Image (cartoon, rainbow, N blue to C red; front, side, top):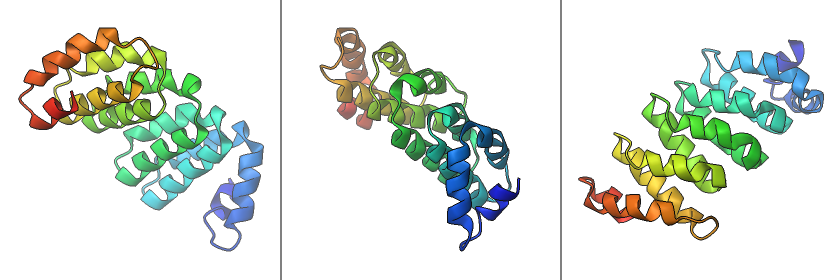
Length: 174
């Protein structure tokens, strides 16, 4: 897509990016293809454009969590937070909690901490049993951020069990 190619140009890129954002959903598929590009800058730029498109791009942004480039995963999280549509993102992020990739589980817990949603409460409680201490700790912190927004009584018992966790940081988070 010529617009996507031009969007990488420093001088003409801003105009092309604005046009792609206005196209919206029609630009999502070509941008998704860019998520697998070998150049991390190209992938990151695609994620940022998907963020400008907004809600129609949410499934593609969650897909970016699987990227091998940390900067793309970071941008995908930032884009989801900028879109700030917990209702549209929660199912995809909850699914991320059970992904085989530890980093995806961890980043999903971070995103759910910043976009509290009642539907994420039980999956976060289950994530307290994750094999990764980093993921368990983040899930505990997310539940703490949820505070009194939702009935968190079902989280109290599992959090108390985590006070016996072998990881000191997990114990502190619980």
